[in-house]
Length: 121
Image (cartoon, rainbow, N blue to C red; front, side, top):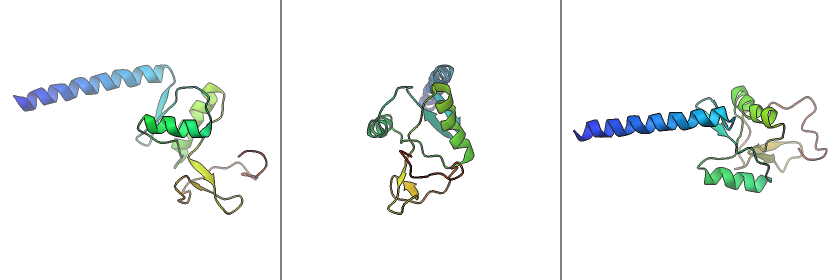
């Protein structure tokens, strides 16, 4: 009987999660790519506040590792007509970038002649 109750509870939770995800998708607050969920609250914030907000939500700041993930981030940029912070930073080598933890980037999709080092990248 306990296994059946656990199964029912799990089914109910899955249903509730599915409904909540549907509402968030309807409000353009989440999208998915490669088994990852990308989310936003649609509000502007500075980089450090964005990193902290992502941690509070149990995630991390978006770091595109494939064209699909890049498109998921671009979805928010276009929908909210704004910019997006990424989980990358400039390395000690000029014009080279790395993950926030110092690891090398495995995926990039820079425009031609970018990053240029002019202004804020």
